[in-house]
Length: 470
Image (tube, rainbow, N blue to C red; front, side, top):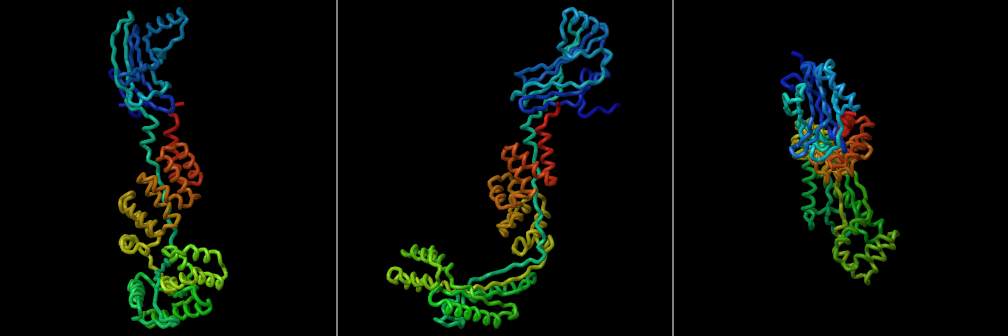
């Protein structure tokens, strides 16, 4: 048996074959197309076959151009009749000896009801006395391809960026210690005021890092800050001595080489004072804040602060705020080993900051795309690296895959706008938002930069929007 073309159907008791049937809506037009194969059709000499494709939804009926196939004798009579009436035939006339294959195309104005219409073939066979020999109607197709149906069936490809490999993973932990020292002294007394608690916290930070075989300490920074009262030189000397005192204490009590310590003076803690004033309920706080903001000379600034309200507000500030400004920051810099995917799956739950973005990306892609675990990893990545452009682009991609457009926009704002992936995903955002022209423009831009996802998206959109039959 001969192989029939795609979706070929038999009509008229298998004498007629239809293939390549298409009902394609584009804008304000419906394009109808099909291929008629009449090789097996035999028609008696005196007979005439009329075929009318009919578009109908039960309430509306639109007959399309008729096809007439005449027998040998009937054809002569038909041509003679046309000559007498001087009329052009309105139907497509298929001569009896040309009954092979031809393409049938029609374009009609599109109406909304047509989305759910079917195309039928109305068949009439007449004898020479014009009496009806057969009248039948067969379904050709009820598949109307509308732009809306095609768009809703399209799911555009979303692009992700693989982050660069972090060759050495440098990390740090920091603790802001508010150690108490007797006035003008720089010796650490472990049981003086709140020192016990502060030192316990510093020890636990060291323990956490030293007891983890995946971490290697590379340096310890100790920075002393002074409260801004009295001469700067004295404050600098005092806070340096206090920072040195913490260093000496740690060298004695922790198993880290003294060579790894670096002590610095962070200065007078004006930033801390501003922060404390802003959150305080002091009635003169705005006056103090303006003095700090507008007076650059250090000594002059301190004098003006002391003068406010006759000096009483300054004295209460010395008691309530200044002690908290004398602090020592202790920062441990360390490196983290590299993890494979299996280890990464565990670390991401326990200590995600030990993973690089690239390792997180590998972990995410070890799960099925779009699964809960896959989504979760990209969410963690952007929480751990909130300003990283790649982390933000990938978090936006995940949001788009879940059709969460508000979240996607939030992350896309922080991504690199010049990448092909960003442009492709902007196209996806516009597509999901129903702005097809903008989506098309964004896909074109990304496709020019060679992004395969965008090229595929663009091709899909063009197929949806381009007319099948010209």
